[in-house]
Amino acid sequence: MYQVIIFLFFTLSFASCKGQLKADEACIKKFKSARELAYANSARQSALDSAMNLVNECVQCDSIRKAVVDFKITLFVSMKKYAEGIGFIESLSEKDFTYGYKQKFMSKGLQALEFNSKSDTIKRTLVYQEIVNDIEQYINNKQDIGSKEFIEIYTDLFAVKEKYLDANQINKEVEALKSKYPDKQSFLDFLKN
Image (cartoon, rainbow, N blue to C red; front, side):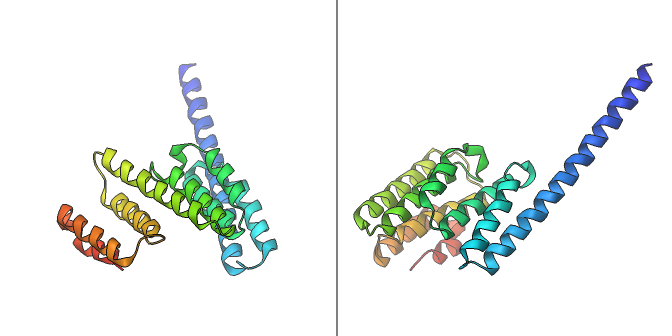
């Protein structure tokens, strides 16, 4: 009797894993189709709408969730639906993003784009400054930053700083970082203007 129960348990476990693999394969296929559709037809609203529909079907697939979330946000930007994008981002949790700072970064980034679309450069710049403060606070509070995260954080940080600082200020900040992170000098040189 005990052996039958164990056999049934393993059989059911295998069947559920196999079903999950098929669901993941379907999600990956839809996600790939959505990306191809959006990139090949980025100027056509109907193609972006179709891509968004495909992405919405994939957002619950855990195996590719972070990639789907990132791409869905990219679609909101391409469609200039900033408020909807902000709502989507705020409905998520921090674990839905690659790194801890990304949720605020993306939400405020869409806020800045919204202000920019309304030609409100003062509010846009204030939001950019908030983003920089958030990222710098994240860096200061983080005990250990891996190499890949380091590159992404500083790439994001300086992409925002370029929106409102001049090249001299950015280059001075990069030079200061080079003395703090001597092993990252070649990457940091990339951030100079």
